[in-house]
Amino acid sequence: MRHETVMTIDRNQQPIRLRGFQLSAGKGFFISIVAIMSLPQAMYFDPAWALLFAVVFLLVYPRRHRSIYTRMMWISSSRGDALEEAIQAAVGRQVTRIPAGKSDESKQRMKLLIYRLEERMLKDLVRSIDPEAVCRIMPFYEWKGEGRQDLR
Image (cartoon, rainbow, N blue to C red):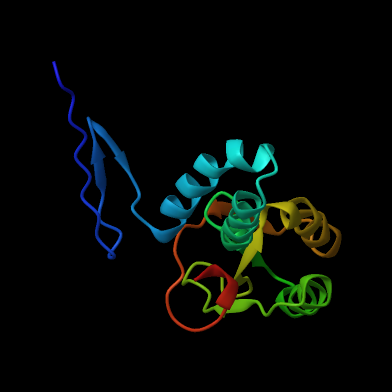
């Protein structure tokens, strides 16, 4: 009995079907496959394969700040100005302010895209400035428009 693997490859991130499994068909997926396939050859110190492995690794490495590492932090606080200045000084990024809802005009809402390793530090910073502030942190998967070039 012959097993057949069907792959549908498209530049527009269309799914690849591998006998019931569905994987992302992005550029990073194929680069990762090449890196995995080159690893045994690189271990034997074949210079050509070692060079290929190094190049592929350098192409894949910048993708480290993707969905599992990025978070959207929403902050609701009555001390928005102080928080905005402290966050900008701590991480070097602007906070996006959102108009407050109808329920409580004294609160200011802000959002900020953060990395997983900044999460604890920013929570502590917010708590030190405003203990009554509410922080929500959610996974973040896609960025469209202007702004952070490293997340595209």
